[in-house]
Image 1: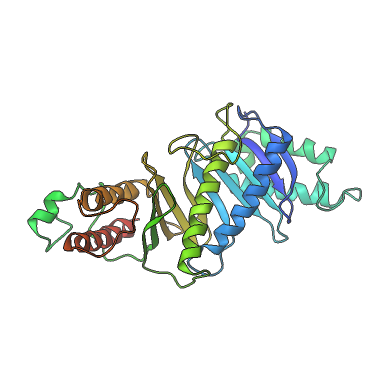
Image 2: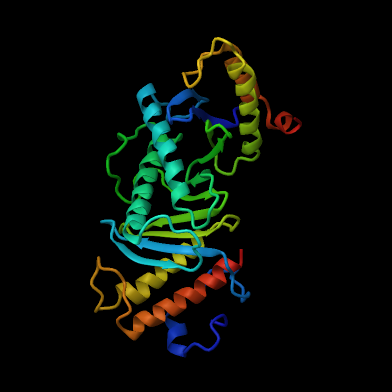
Length: 141
Length: 185
């Protein structure tokens, strides 16, 4: 049983480099996912402008009627966001784990070009293991 | 209405009942700003209580806020994982059409949003760690209905102004309600 509906990874310019759907009814084609990723990138930036105090880092959590969106931005500007069920727990740690997998299997891959779409088999393999694992096992990390 | 000590009896009878759980706590510092927009994007009300940083002038700020909400609503309607049939991105959505968000959180603030079927959008920006403000927003909307919409001298679609003593009551009540409700979280 998957804990999340879908995962998006956006590079620092706002382009989508990875999209994986884990069984939502709203599966999207490539064009739509590209548009949504760029839209999210812009809104993340605009939300920083509307902050009443300094030091805002953008949207971490968006709560809607039928889903929640958790976003994690790395120090280099790469954004990872997941669409999950409302009030799903431990999504922040899941995002950190996915970031670790990204650094291990994508960034350390000498054939991977920066900011390009991710086509690394080991990344896909390990990612599906992490996501399909039971939530209890995820907590034990 | 034991929360509003010192208010007149007519005022307390017109107000709808406050949501359960609002205690008579001390004045809180949780609310930063409040915006109310109508369907066309006109900012009917903007109130700030605590805003150290202002990046844009008021007109631009209102337009940016409205634009952000418009885009976010299109975004959530399209990315909704539970419905298969969705319209195209960018098509203006009717109030209530498609999945809508009710809150988002950053490390410095939390934005709580409510859209009514008539297209009135209420936005309350609070401290990052306050709880769910949907009840508070419903209460503020009820105040708007009671004191603004039902006022025969108010022209719909224009900003709410200090013209009559009824409006003055609305502001003082609104401020007290916000301090009480938001400080409870």
